Image (cartoon, rainbow, N blue to C red; front, side):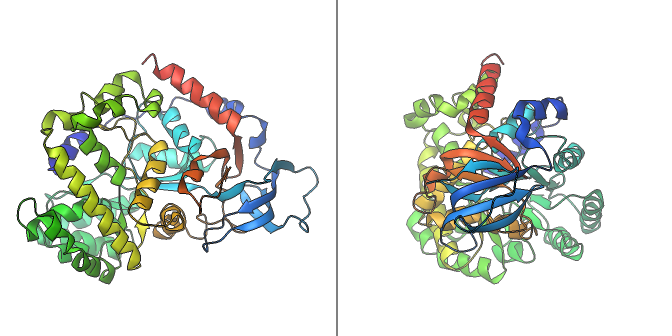
Amino acid sequence: MRMCLLRVFVNACLTFVICVSPTNIRGQLGSQESKNQTIAFINVNVVPMDTNQVLNSQTVIVRDGRITQIGAASSTPVPEGASRIDGQGRYLMPGLTDMHVHGFEDNLQEEMFLYIANGVTSVRHLKGRSELLKLRQQIARGEMLGPTLYTCGPIVFGDKKPDEARRIVAEQVKAGYDCIKIYDDWSREGYEALIAAANSHKIPAIGHLARNLPLDVNLRGRTEVSHAEEFIYTYFMKETGRGEWAKRETLIPKVVEMVKANGVAVTGTLVAYDYIGRVIGDETLQALVDKSELKYVPRKRRTKMTSDSEYRDRLKSGAAVGFRNGLNLQKKLIKALQDAGVKILLGTDGSLQANFPVIPGFAVHEELRLLVDAGLTPYQAILAGTRNAAEILNAAGEFGTVSVGKRADLILVEGNPLADVANAARRVGVMVRGRWIPENEIQRRLSEIEARFAKE
């Protein structure tokens, strides 16, 4: 069902404009962005995310965009001239990674800031284009404020013969993309050629499952399945009769066995699936219309995410029951995958151009709550967007934990996120590659975005 709908969405995004100068961005964020500045978080509780623990009363030193020292506040000296940030009673955790985003077309600056404002310091884009490669470089060089960007190449649709599939992989590797995004039904020969080529070039093959192929064929050689719902169409529905949700739950162990045996990670995107079902269900429509984060979406896009959603136009309201059952099945699957040691990843499928109200940055915290609702602990849910993400992106040496030598992508929050995952949204400020953005700056910028989008 969703394949046809998403193809429309995929084809809708074509243009990309960068219109904000680096000078303006730096001016807006204040003087603490100096590359060589030393910043010290004083007497802070550290949530390192290398283990399920909190290190109390620490001092964390950041210099040149890296964490250079972590130690007990009572014995760790603060370098002379360092800017001090009070951590008393607060918690310092790694920045989050959204492993499934789209967008970055119109309103580029605003969309990137919505991620940063919510502590999302890295993102992976799953519909790449050459402009994103340029943007990735600008962000890395500090010329553009935004989350560190990873991007797949242009989506590889399934109407490819083996030679063409191999050629596309080689071209995307040469261009410098970070992953191969698979979509649509495939011939077995074409699909296996694509996977073999990706493995040969050591580039991750991710994305949708080829729903016409058996699940075991789909899983061999790929790195990740980018929607938990793909298992419904590719396996559960094929193995059961119409509407047999209870029977499908009995098949979860078999799916877990195959996923684990192939070493495949899974990104849930539960929040996207949830909102599609809610958009077409009249009983929850008003709650969507009143969703507060919609003020950070251009006014002309808001109705497209709710009452005039393409999903609402194409799907009958009765389908909402199936989405409820499907969400429940996915939650149970993700819990079983987590228990089996499969890597779960945090991803939302959101953008300002989406046809459902999955708002950049804000949706990450909704996804965290859904993972906890599925039975994951707060630590496991946050792990999906920190250390697990870094490992899948082959960047475990760069980010994902609060440890010496790592990139200083950090969130300072008011409560312990390991006790309640909602505390990850109670920010005091966000640090992006060593640049400290305090809450008053975040609120000022969000107010500017709200005012601008009220007119668009």
